[in-house]
Length: 471
Figure 1 (cartoon, rainbow, N blue to C red):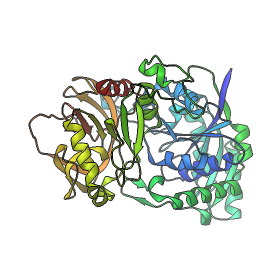
Figure 2 (figure 1 turned 90 degrees about the vertical axis):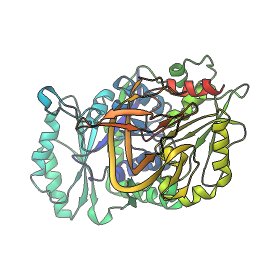
Figure 3 (figure 1 turned 180 degrees about the horizontal axis):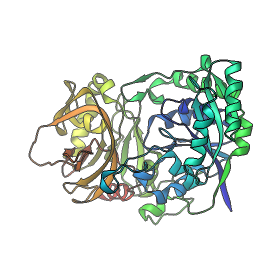
Figure 4 (figure 1 turned 90 degrees about the horizontal axis):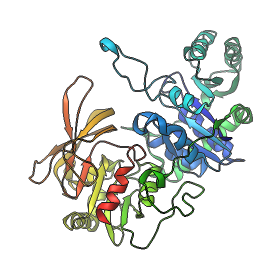
């Protein structure tokens, strides 16, 4: 048996136009088919555009955060009931987490697009930024086709092509390397999606502009790429285990387990209500998080901290990542919600906050009052903190045991200075690439907050523990 066919959109390096081409391809295929969108790595922003293009949740496939053994099962879960899947890669095709080998020598990146393509057995379309390329492109492509034999390079999409003559030369170079050029996108037609300090502005913040941007990407790809040829080149992923949130949390309820788009049904009798923050300020989340919470027995209620109050009867709240620094004044102005969060913590409710959530729970953000649940202040800086972290829990909490080890991801330009109030301790400790020890976050009896993003599918017991703590 086989499952939904897939194609991976990769590139020789970052900045080649993967997101524009992948999102446009998803939109073009979605005109006649049901498309499952995926993104390699921890990125939260691209999946938001993927979701607009396909009408389905954008999902991440990250071997580092979720474990290599979960990649194919997570794919089958997200692709169930669809006609084709498009997987957008991360960085260059073979780029991933760098680890030190014997003697300190760096070894091949772990969790790369190539790793995911190989795990799925999916063919790769290489998006090449054609600016500055001519006949020598053949040598570049020859290297990519032979570097890792287990990765099937099936075709090339030429991006930012300057002229008809330039296109002919590049197509000849592709043929010389034994690869088919399945598209040539003119440079003058390139789209620029607005960006800021952490990359592209999330689709959740742009509203109608994001819809228009995705429509433009779709039209661009439909006009200049052979979409039907890519459909022909896509290959089915082998049958095997399917990730299930019910299996992961060990919940006894099995009715209709997962709906067509992967959302779990929830019980309404005796189930605690978990408030899940979203909206423009809290747009960094994983689809599997809500699914796991529901499978663990929670009634999940989404709300927007910019305008809403805490959902009625909430026994716990989850604040994922996002851009609170952009919306600090508006978040602060919602005084009713800030008071409700303080009351929730004082009453023994559990709050789980990552990155943006940590800033929101702080006493202040850039001098603007926040919830005051976590002692300390946060400020925006120009320094980017980015990368995977191997962390250990420094204190027990409702979500993690002291000494528990996790691999998470850090991605922010703010800094947090804690007040050191009694009754709390840092959440995590780790060493950076230079061996320098760091601590992060704040833990108390009811709050777990930190900069570290932990993928729920990699640690599904966290959702179960949260629900159990307030049940």
